[in-house]
Image (tube, rainbow, N blue to C red; front, side, top):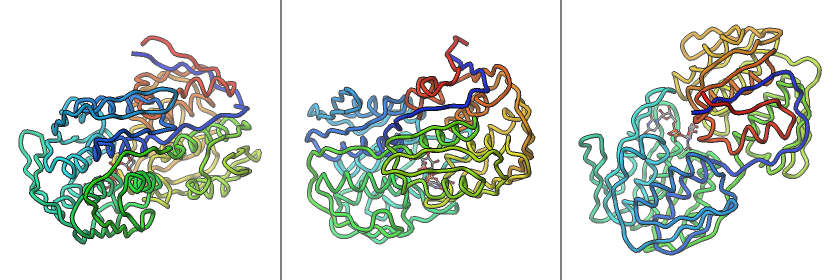
Length: 420
Ligand code: UD1
């Protein structure tokens, strides 16, 4: 295992290219199961999670090759319908092979993903959605057994207690594309990654309308064919780099940004005093000398993303004044609070709220990454802390950030890997 050592205090400067979106590439790779024809996915980020999805596809009968950001997926002619616990338990997004397996093979045995440190993460909406399409579901021994004689379109309300679900929308959409007749998903997730999946499915021959809105209409087709697709830029990686610029009082220009996907984050950052200059797919970020505190509530897209909550907390931790962050998607997504406090932050958790009293400076410390976005928040804190920080368990970071330490080094950060 490796840890990331960071010597804080360097204002980051220069240009950096944002990678393709993790949350888009994973379901899109799963969607290749819907055809036996070859597919090519371009602009794919080389991540631990991408690799896990490729392992799953191989276990289900695909041959996958990854060269310079392009993934070629071909069928071996053999089909398995079993997604094993070992692979699904390491990455929740693996559960989105359920929809394509049911659609193509009319049966699936997929391990339940289980919970994780950011809270209970049920799959009731996924199961409710596919049941409406005519799928029989049985849960036994930690696995979902799904089978269907005929898939038929249906009207499905997919909203849950915490709003819409990204992967449930993906799963239902991928089942409905091969169902007979029309499916209407109400309260569908509007995240850009869901839209990207829909665009890929359309290239494969699916008939989908309304993606990107809460009502998605799908007219089932008999079969899908191979397709080529380029993954959208990762809005969470971009957001994390934007905060790296602000927290170090640097001057970073990001390339390959879909600015339309960053609305809620940029709005808040401008409110606190960031200077954002947009130019096509480039974004330059600097800060006024003094930033202001702010209140934030995480919400489904187009609201403020829960995947940016931890990174924003690091920024507010060094912004004098009181900021309040309210987490509305994952009640327990606060593992980073205790670690940030070890670095001198003053953050108190009260239920779904984190009350942050901004301090003048943080001090370097040994801290532990607990999940993907928490690990990014600790790296950000390390970039501004006085002295050395060591972030252990960086495999969490590698799940979702492509070459992150290398990108930071190119921007001038003093950051390197050491054995734990
Ligand atoms: C996706 C993202 C993840 C992001 C999250 C919320 C991927 C691979 N991951 O995860 O990075 O943090 O969206 O934006 O795209 N829920 C239920 N029942 C369900 C499913 C979800 O109650 O069947 C709840 C969840 O517990 C959570 C909320 O709905 O409170 C939203 O979760 P969801 O959108 O499903 O998250 P994921 O799709 O797993």
